[in-house]
Image 1: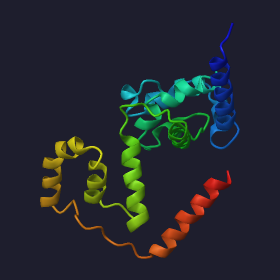
Image 2: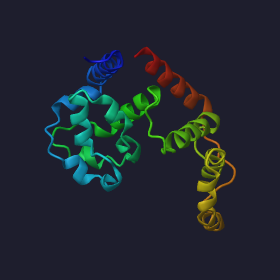
Image 3: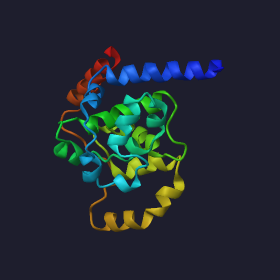
Length: 192
């Protein structure tokens, strides 16, 4: 006899699978031919617990929770090598962003993953200044992860000495235009 909890979980996985496969860019997962070119061209594939093609197979097979708990999308550095090499022209990097978003929404981010905190600090920087100040970004991130910041302090001092790290954010030319773009992107996201 299958327990009620299993049915609820299966229903949630079917719902998430339909959400991913039913919209751009997730629907292109169905065109993946499982060639492995994406994983072979990824500079961080060795750090991932599953390559993009394995993630796509999990999603197609209905094992969406396992895919969302994977570290794969969080290791994507948006280098686009996978997309350039993909014979099916699948927007893999865009799918990784979608999977990160769903992972956050469903509370399925791996416990040891600090990237959501870095992304949140990055977003706050862009919203406040229109661009990122590395020093303020690390200060913001460092509130939750002070040991990470301290581990990179020597590199920060060297960058500061060479004029490659700025303590005060530089202003952008048209902050209102940027804010209009951010607002439009938010409205587009909420319309989905």
